[in-house]
Length: 188
Image (tube, rainbow, N blue to C red; front, side):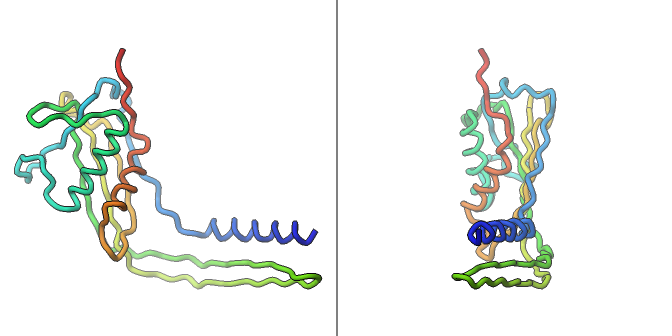
């Protein structure tokens, strides 16, 4: 009986604490209803007005972002268009970082235990706090160049650690962002 009671108290405390934990916001995506993703096979990079037209990343972080996006698209059956050809889709993206205030809410932890015929419990309380954090935001635009229309858009924001932007962090964020991007289905 004591074991069951202890298990129930522990489960209730864990559920309560998990409910109070701060989780990152979900990625936001939009998809044009009329877009036929089965018609698209290749992708390329959208040339920005300030770009030199080479299609090459402008910075180290751009390289991380392009590598991550290309990996996700290839995993969904798309192929990067060879240089000098017109892709079915062009990919544009924007990245930014900013200082942001992070609020850690009031927290309560509950513990219950027993040893032999003795029982005990404890309650821990954490006070609210506010701190400055650096947050990175990535917005990806997928464009049908033949129609000159954006057909998919996704955005994600994540807290950056003190080491800055790392390839694994970028890949994880892009994987999460593009999770609902339509996989390519071959036309009959």
